[in-house]
Image (cartoon, rainbow over all chains, first blue to last red; front, side, top):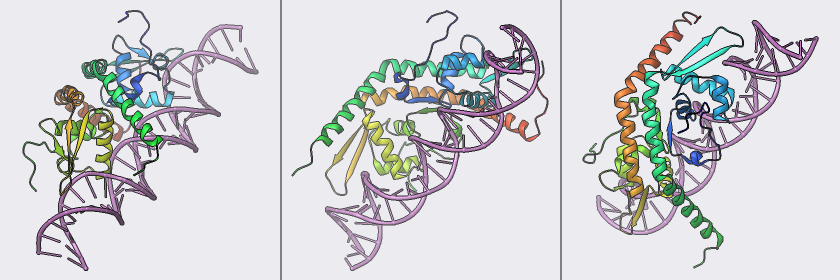
Length: 132
Length: 132
DNA sequence: GTAGCCGGTCACGTTGCGGTAACCGGCCTA
DNA sequence: TAGGCCGGTTACCGCAACGTGACCGGCTAC
């Protein structure tokens, strides 16, 4: 819970890739987290999310705007500035995202080790030719 | 068509299709709900879920078994009987599913009406251009 | 001039989830 | 002999999500 200007980063190699809960599209939950503290600009979001392309981020933000989860403000400046901020409805998702993260903290290790056990079993099974 | 006692039904036409929260694969959360009260058989699950095909249900159940969310018991009887039951880990998902349903009860209407407003705006042309 | 920044759009390729249809094998009944 | 029930498997297919690379317009700085 750092309160620095920097937001958390999202490592594509982290177990999030096996995270069994998804809210909206692939990046929606992370966008919600990014916007929790304050509004952010497009490029800022891209930097924080790390591996998302401009097109996919645009799609995600447009869908969230359509669903009333965030608002988009264009400032007629130079260079162009666009700010995204959570609406009240979008903020309600925070509880859900936190519930999901809490579940993951408590149970994701169990899930992943069960998966590893299963995969190991398959490997072992395929290693020897079935005989009778 | 008789339903199994106390099992919820899932209508494919209900707003669930716009439900922005997904746990595991498409049917995972509903399988968890189906198995909340007691173990169930394959065909029983198919009937309750309504529109799921055998292949997809098999895939879902295999993935959940792999992840340690449920256990699969084969009884060597006639006709063949297979029972699926939630594990302790699978039961932990119930809280999350309930949290998602609670969010939906409170906010899904707002989301859907925001979406309808947006779609209507598109139909009527682009309306007014946002200016600042 | 030309290079870069910002916030995108456009055309296109790939991947994988979800779904359909056909089939299977053992047991039972008509 | 035929068909039904149970719990699947296999082959195939469509489509939307996801991602890549090129480009854009207005402005500024070098």
